Image 1 (cartoon, one colour):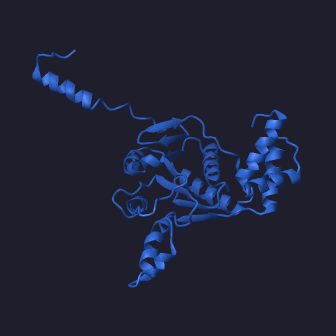
Image 2 (image 1 turned 90 degrees about the vertical axis):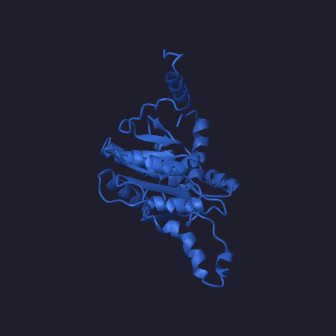
Image 3 (image 1 turned 135 degrees about the vertical axis):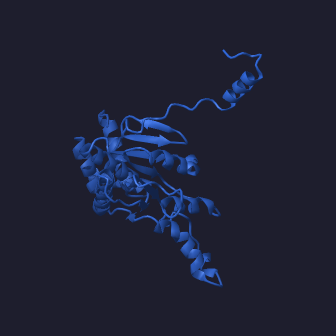
Length: 274
């Protein structure tokens, strides 16, 4: 214990209380995935569906898995924007692509999901990951910005490329969004009397920074039924076409997510754990 009679000791104790010793750094080589909320939290097991069960998105699957494989191997790879219809497997495909790359080359690649409240601390994360001898795919799920938020999109543009705090060479970004441009767009963008392209170009500038921009669209009835069939075959579940279609009709959509929810219902009835 320090000498409480020593003024320097008292000052040192006060500073220690205000700024405690730095926590032990996370081992960025030990886990397949991490969650970053300003500090890392390791994820012991990356849960993802097998790639072969992600149906109706063959072109998207080929593009994402090829890019993730390049990143894992240390080759040139793109930042990725996956945009489009809800429930069509954007996030699932990213997880599945990383899991497949990890199975082929254990330890070379990790997935780091950034929580929404930690976006402003991406620079700190990049600084940490840039010093680690491993490749990382930094994942921002369901990204969107409020109307009037210009600072967020501009910061992300700078991190992607062009800024002095841009992500390091061993890191790539993967973002999912329901919007192709990520930020919202309005017809009023065309009302600029000086240069109507300026407002449009500014809003599209963020999406343009991604080397891969991959669209996901609502699936057809045949694709929806094929997804259900694939899941049911994998889990040895009997199913009925009419009931599967009625399930989607009651939810007002057909998607991979709706198909999985129907399969979950079937498994629950059958007493099967998925």
